[in-house]
Picture 1: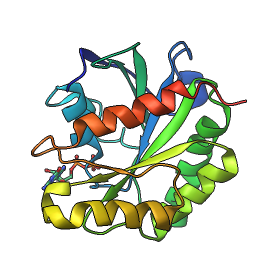
Picture 2 (picture 1 turned 90 degrees about the vertical axis):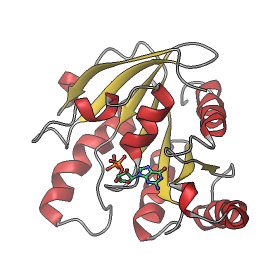
Picture 3 (picture 1 turned 180 degrees about the vertical axis):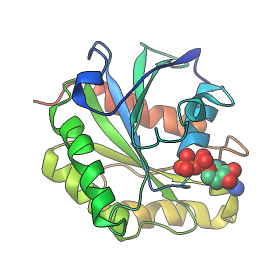
Length: 201
Ligand code: GDP
């Protein structure tokens, strides 16, 4: 299933540039190259939506998309800047962290974060760090294993269960392939479950 409609809203480098929090938001996080743009584009049924905002120099911005899901009310997708959480140079992390941390801590519309994990690599230190950080901030989290087509079918479910255990997640991660579109419905279900939880207390 694809979104009924999707459009780019805005990019922001600081809270003054965030759009009004008038729709529930789900944010997507993952290290560079995990398949985040491909997943957003595939869910939205738009070949270049996530990349259109990715002009040079703007990769460290937060990007908002207004999405009408296959069923239910519209929401914002927020594309968080990708990076290696633990291994990036300190200077880069210092630039990233306050912006993203400010967003995660203060954004009233935020319903949760979807952490993308490469299905073949499984969760590593970066993802464990991020999940621990989200838990500290009280932000609900789910995971999606990306590039599932690269794993033999028999290995997919065990990989999802292992990732759930390793990351201490409340739900089994969805398995998704942007190439075959397998798992899109599971990702939508996971997004719906986050939105349904309502705002943080
Ligand atoms: P981002 O940096 O996280 O936004 O990653 P991209 O979406 O740009 O994808 C990074 C690379 O992984 C590209 O070469 C994609 O073609 C590839 N990729 C993304 N999704 C999939 C997938 O589901 N299956 C496979 N086999 N490759 C994928």
